[in-house]
Structure formats: structure tokens, C-alpha cells
Image 1 (cartoon, one colour):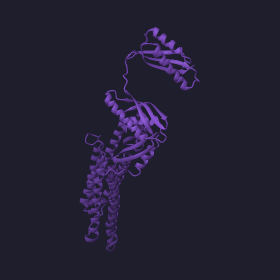
Image 2: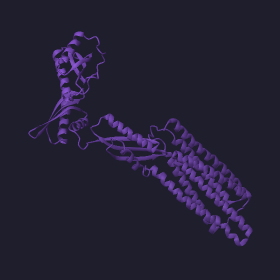
Image 3: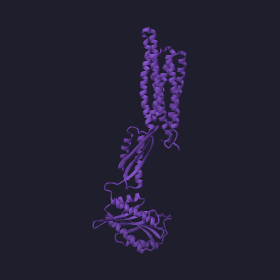
Image 4: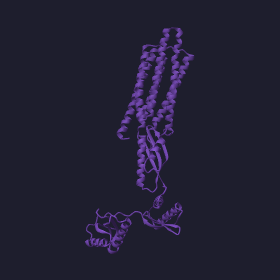
Length: 473
């Protein structure tokens, strides 16, 4: 997520949590004052409930602030799970509140009679409470959905239950007021608020348990439902991915962390494998929106893999490189000749041991191979920093042109580049040939030119002859 978008998200979450705290302070104070003035136990109970809401709102406010801290040395995945822990704490507070409501309802139904003063102040404070709770629960739900915050979702749930509990108190006050005017025979109506309170408490218990299960699942690193399958399907659509082997997903707050293993052709280059992994990562990040994705690439053999690809892959597995790979068949026996590049800092004994391992690995993977012959050479070739030698002896250039143009099939020797080398001059020369010439013949002419230059021109150490079609020079 871009830095400015992250800062805006943090600001919106803090603002929603702070508004919840301020609303909880207002309602707790109002209910406490009116409850004491009217003697209404229902309103005093609501004041206690709002006090619990205030505690929950404070927990959410601090959880949202702490969860947005960046990763550090002790918390490499960030602090997002603080939100999930906060949601679990609020769930427990909701359950405690519901237990208390059910207990009070049973007491009023079977063991004691509670006198309630159904005054205008009692109705007024509960109506204000409902309006405030509707407003703040909407704000919190909107912020929770937008930023995937379980802490704000728990806070929103907490305050949406206040709407029901406040409505129950108003219903109870209304029935008390009605029973007083209908006469003693209607006194049982006053017990309806206790029954309604129990029904609301049961509903809140169910919703709280669902929220608590989600928070616990995240704390226990359970994968979001369906996310593993969606990531696997998305990764498998990337060109170059043969299979998606392992997908692991976990959440922390609003962030999703995914790591997966994909199989790719073992004969491709490191750069190609990296690009495939990068494309998988981009697609999965777009899928989870916010989080971190790690892609592990696993090389696998392909059906119909060519001999050079197989040998090259085996060499790469051992930290070597192979080229000039040729296979021969003599009287039903197969032989492989190849050049093996080894690290240049090895001794002959160390290099030979590494190449022995390569030959043994080739024979294990290709049982039909009778013998493997290798030419050992250092992997790294020093890059010389000298500038292009433009002032080389004109006689040297004339000799090179004469040799090349004496070869039947090559014309117009041009772009002669001569550079100082370690053992003489390094030469690169371009020549023209018939564009309809078979590539095998063009290669033979280039080889012949290299041989003739080496024989006929002294002081040349490295030679490269580039043949291009006539008309494109």
C-alpha cells in the first residue's frame, strides 16, 4: 500500500475509534445522572453497560493505534494481530454483559420486583442513546469494512447491541407506564421488558461467538476461507508456472501474508525464473490487496526435455555450467562430451572433484549414457577495461581484410574492432554472405575465417567473426 494511502487509512481508523470513545463517555454520563435522578434500575443498568462500552472503546482506540506500527526486530510481521486480540477481548466483554443481562432478567421475573419511574427524562436519555449508537455503529462498520479491521468491527457490534438493549429499556418503560394506567390487573406487563432483555441477550451471545471465532481463527493463523484456493488458481494462470505445490496463508489485522511454492522448467535462466516469481507475486498481492507475498520457485524436469537442457540443469544444481554439449552413439552405447565451467578460484584438484560429481550425476539421471567426457574451464572471464584500439597498425587491418576476403563466400569485411587483450589483440570483424546460405554453411565460413586469421595474422589471441546477410550491412 502506498505510504500516503497507509497514512490516510490509519487516520480514518483512529478517527472512528476516537469518536466511539467520546460517544461512550457522553452516554455513560447521561445514563448515570438520569438513572440516579429517576431511580430507574433499567437505566442504571444501561449506564453500567455504557461504562463497559467505554472500556471496550478505549481498548479499540489503543489497539488501532498500536496495530498500525511498522514491523520491528521483535515483530517481523508487524503488529496487526493486536486488532484481533482486541476483538477477542471485546467479545468476552460482550458475553459478560449478556450474562449480566440474563441474570437481571431472571431476578426480575422470579425473585424480585423492580419499581421503575417512567419519566420523560428516562425516555429522553434512552432515545438519545439510540440515536448516538446508530450513528457511531454505522461509522465503525464503514471503517471496519473499508480497512478490514476486526477491532473496529467488534466495537461496531458492541454499540449496535446497545441499540437493542436501549430499545428494550424503552419498551420496558413503556409497558410500566401502560400498566400504571390500565390498573393492577395489567401489572404483569411490567415483566415484558425482562423477557425482551433475555431475547436480545441470546441474540448478542450468538453474534459475539461468531465474532470471537473469527478473531480466534486469525490468532491461531487459520487461513481465510477460500483464500488458499483463490491464490492457487491465480498463481497457476501465470505463464511459465507448471504447478502450484504449496500455499500457506495467515492474517494479522488487515494484512494477509502468503507464501507459496511454484514449479517451473528447470532449464530456464535465473532471470526467467525470477520474472515468473515476480509475476506470481504481483497477481497474489492484487488478490489480497494488503499484505506480503513470498514466492519460492522449484525447478522440475519437463516432458520431452532435450539433452542439453537436462545436462545444463544437472550442472546448475551442482553450481556449475555446461556448454558445447554433444552426444554420440557407437554400437549401441551413448557418450556425452561437454565443456564444464567451474569457479575460477578452484585448484585443479578441487575442480576435477566437482566435475567428477557432475559426471556421476549425469549417469544417474541418464542411465543410457555409458561415458561422460568433460573439458574443464574457468567460469569467469575477466572483462578488460581498455578502450577500443582505433589506432591499431593499418597493416594489421589490411592483413585481416585480405585473409577474410580470400575465403570464398565471404565479402565486404567491415567493422573491424581491435582491442588489447591479455595475450595479444582481441578481434571482432563483420562479414557479408549470401542471405540464402544455410546456417550450417555460414557457421563453417565463420570458423574457417577464424582459423585463417589465427594462422595468417600474428598477435591475435581472441577472434570473433560475425556473418550477416548481404544487403543489411
